[in-house]
Image 1 (cartoon, rainbow, N blue to C red):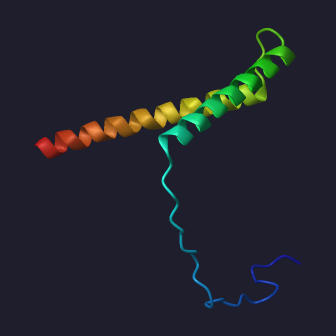
Image 2 (tube, rainbow, N blue to C red; image 1 turned 90 degrees about the vertical axis):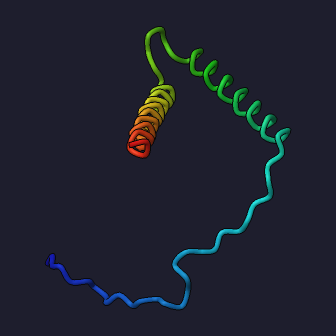
Length: 94
């Protein structure tokens, strides 16, 4: 039998804070950031070469498709944010 009542009544748990406090992180050095960036580029290059070896001509692997979609969504969102910022500056000037 399906109905809108819960099988067991919910008990509120007010003993803990719903959001855990965020611990501060140490600042990132420029050298560490460059090293991490280089590692990410190498990893992406290795994945791309491995996928190119496996894929046939004209086919896109699911990972490549996902990367293209993610990049397109980022670019679209970024362009919308820039346009909104331009609108806000125009409004502030007026």
